[in-house]
Length: 465
Image 1 (spheres, one colour):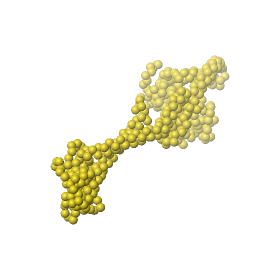
Image 2: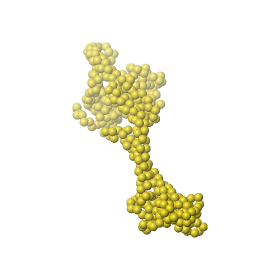
Image 3: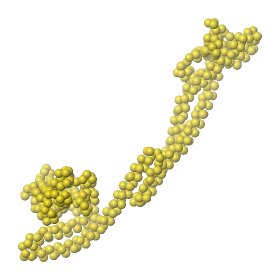
Image 4: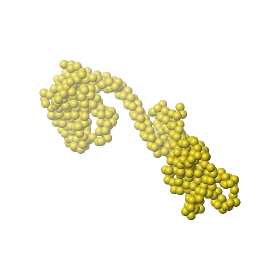
């Protein structure tokens, strides 16, 4: 389990990397140790030979053997004044197998010879050549065994590896503590905050407060803070929308009952003999009927269920004229209405739902133009296309702001008019999708806004002809 933690893996990797670094240092250091070992034997051999030369015949054979044993060599040769002189000698037990020149060796030669010495366990006799100390001659040669040298190199290597292990463990331990404090502890704090936040995401007090001094961790904490704030805000908004939906559903239920009574009264008005009342009564009845249907659909919307469209064939021009008549009455006379629809154009859709779609688009366009205080034009056009029909609603208003366009068909986001709810376009888009079509914003700039609705000819729904 420990090896699966960040700190545990960091500890193991640190120890391994330190050991690897020490191994890379080990080989050159052993090679340098071998060089120093050989040079020290040459210095001893030089001292022994100079002692013999200074004493002359006063040193007997026993003392000569002691000098060679102290220097750990078999014989010593000095070259002085162009003359090569065997100063000290003793019997060599086996032939000389290799000669090493220590006067100016390269690093690669030292490493190669050191590895070669370590890999050959049997004892050999080697000749070494070096420069005498204090320039006491031109060069010095000595023969010696390799076994003592190899044993000294192994002992040195073991001590180096042991020291490396201690250093790696100490370094890994210090880094383990540092990582635990600088990385693991802040990460655990973030994880703990996420767990606490998940228990009550609506509670703004549980949003994380960035505290880390490490730049990357602080950036992660700040990003998490932004995410939690957005999520908390979205959850609160959804809760408010749910409460609002319940209130709207209750209001729509009571309003439907009131409008039903008004609808019964309007039926009596329709029987009036007054010509003006007789002409206005059908429109009043139609308006009240649509209001009742809207209340019923609002109740269905509160259940997250928009009723499926009841498809029928009808001429679009009559429906558009009904919409424009209502807008002319509601408007202030600044808007001119233009239609570009063939009188005989027939399409298949739910008449009431399409009325709501076009009514929403037309009303939004009228209110946008009237808000400027300048005259404007609204044009509604329609036609057939391959696979279905298209309906265009365009105006010469001020256009939609960028923020509104980013959330155009989202509930409670797209409202651009003061006092608007932002539901009209969301409902319109949903109704068009219910027909299997799509509602899109074609353009919106300083010259006006244009929406296009596409209705398919073939639907999976049955044709109620």
